[in-house]
Length: 532
Ligand code: BGC
Image (tube, rainbow, N blue to C red):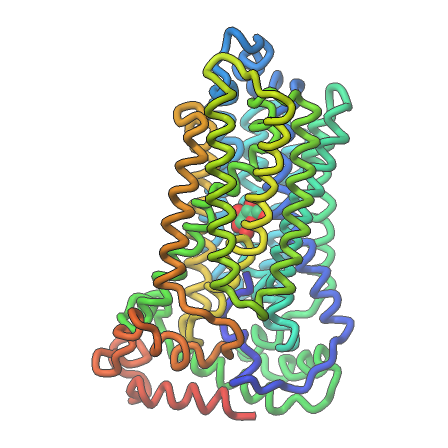
């Protein structure tokens, strides 16, 4: 989910001189902690909500229902509770709101300060959660964690994409996703261990989020601001000095000139959000709205948030449920590696389309097994079928992890032209958190009402999004980021018509800026990228 801005330090495939310096390595550790924190929050609550002590303290109604046993309860509805869902989803609502502020703070105080703000939110949020005495305190903690996610998810990837040498920027981008999956797995493992601690195991689970939170905060204090951000704020000498130290070379003139020019051009786009809605940006905007939405409509977070609850609902028992969640978490991590390896070789579309078939197939199998084995009042799922469900869930998670997981973030960050890249990225983050919120809030009720049909529901979405990919998502593999318009959008059978020069507006909102027409402005954008 690399951020936008004028982060594209590579131009038309031209590489600036750059070594992989210690500062760049520290940045990788930063990515790890930002992603870990987000992933930990995604993974931890599912396990915690199957812990009886936690339920008894905060959700006594659900606790009584779960304890009452199978016969008196509707199987699929054991955990259906608005409060429980709000506990989960409040984080994403807060994150969504914070993203709007984060696009300001990343521009003004800068990327580093924004990460610091995120770290402080995380630490206070974790403290409130681990020490929670009542539901209000618990939800207040989740809201603060959400603010942390909003700031961190905007600033960390932006920071990384600006500080990394071009040749490792793509890899670092998916590395962020890899760390999200590590965070989820770490949370599942912690839950598996703490579930055995009577009384306060859940506090330990929630408190362990403090580890990535502290690392992120200390990291933000240690690292330098990005040269792009310094130049953007007029601190040119400092920007050049930082560029020299991170690139490990004194000769940074070409890249510095590029930064100055990119900054000038980005400033010309006075209203990036308004610009985003112009006709010639329509294709990118549609893709940036559709991809994060579709990513959530795969149903992945039904599994990531609620795997232990889901397995418990199926009658696996608490321990086996937590164990199965660890297994799916591990599959998620390993399959993300497949994506890192293959995304620039086989391309985005192949990964999407293959994964579409795999996800559709596994969801339909899960629906059939559940439909024939789990009734409203009991489950008579045999060991063999239970194993089949776990295997199919793993098959599904694997497909997601090498397609929609990383690519749902990667593609929105690489399709926009310079002037709207940052705004486009914020839109993608917002849409992602909005739909994550909707799934978090609705899943347990949907499970209760749709029953096994929930998997058919998500498989229908997988079908729709695969058709979208097939016809409307162009391949962006190996296309330099600044050549996307010419080589991808203008050549596309459908989107090409939006690139019609006669209908184009000028680059800068309001029809003119510095007297430049769109063509002139685009020419100067090309000059910039060709400069070195
Ligand atoms: C998604 C998260 C999801 C995670 C699973 C991310 O790309 O945005 O919502 O939980 O992948 O690995």
